[in-house]
Amino acid sequence: MRIVIAGAGEMGSHLAKMLSGNGHDITIVDKDPKALDVVGSLADIITVEGDSTAFATLRKASVRKCDLFIAVNHEENDNVVAATLAKQLGAKKSIARIDNEEYLEPNNKEIFIEMGIDYLFYPEKVAASEVINLLGHTSTTEYVDFSSGKLSLVVFKLDPASSLIGRKLSGFSEEEGLLAYRTVAISRGGQTIIPRPDECFMGGDTVYVIARQDAVREVMEFSGQSSIEIKNMMILGGSRIGIQIASALQDDVNVKLVDYSADWAYRLAEVLERTLIINEDGRNTEAMMEEGLSNMDAFVAVTGRSETNILTAMLAKRLGVKKVIAEVENMNYINLAESIGIDTIINKKLVTASNIFRFTMSTDVQAIKCLTGSDAEVLEFIVKPNSPATKSRIRDMDFPDDAIIGGIVRGDKVFIAVGNTEINAYDRVVVFAMRGSVGRVGYYFN
Image (cartoon, rainbow, N blue to C red; front, side):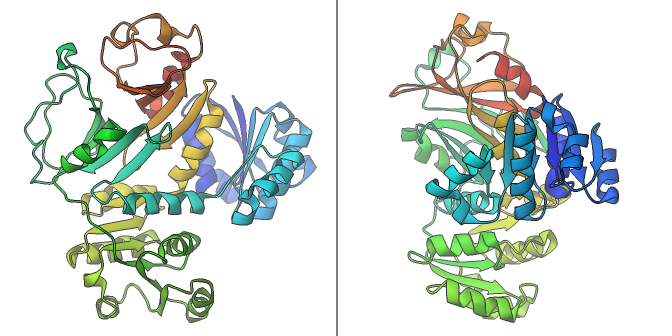
């Protein structure tokens, strides 16, 4: 697939690196030659210097021949204009990053479709939704629903108290009967393992489980951590993500939002009427303790500075806060943040990748989630008639070793997949796959 990316910032660079690694032809456009040099050194791509809202630049980038145009400039207006022009010049699909929730309202989205923009995405809104979802499942580090919740991916770190430690994984024997859940991956020592028979759980493992809706609560109990009800929470950072979280929860939870800017704190107080706004520097340990950090059920750090978020999250954990979530945009810091005990990491680049990646698939992908701290994705496919997956049982499919079929939804019926499971046309299939095998996995359902 030929893909043109407008914007060589952190998000554009991450997308270029990720997509070029999956065999796509990537061209990236930016005004800044230094930014282009940096991204050009990271991946095998073509760089074009110039303004992505200018016809001449877009023609130079050959957008008329591209299958997908992605606008991820810093300025929202530039993205809207660039995506519109690219579609008019011949791009088959055109998508744009936005920062305005109003654009996502159904009537307004129709206007952008008429302009030629196929899809709008707002990373901060999706990131905030993930945080809110996780606050409802406090014993997990990630939680993703598929097929309207009929199947879920539950991710948790094994606490020393977990009953799973030392036990063999189940779900590999055909004699086990109908399964309600199955472990599809384990992250251990910085490596993600697709488990095979005789694999045992170890303390500190991060475990990825596909579960039916009726088994989610049981799976969560295996973590060794008890779920908690969030009554008091603190948000550090009046960013777009912080505002979205506070706005969604302030009617049901006692929310304190801390921001270092006095002017911005006053503006936040006008917008978030039922949130207590505190003007303070989150790096000031004494001030955070005075504001009752140790009494919080949850702490969410979303300042936009990875270092500040990690340090304050560490403080919250040390003070006994039960659920700690931090936004970490520096990809190099993610493993560090997880290793020091931060419960959940939010990363807008991975959120964006999850939104965009499905547009690069030839198969009918209903959902895709790029997983934090793991070089893997979990995808939901709709199986096409006469596809390879419909012609044999799973064990005879010659499925890639670095991928595993977790579950199947067939109408109102839900199955956890085992070797003798048969897949039918139009089934919804949830697959866990290492990033390098995602393209090959799609072949089986196409």
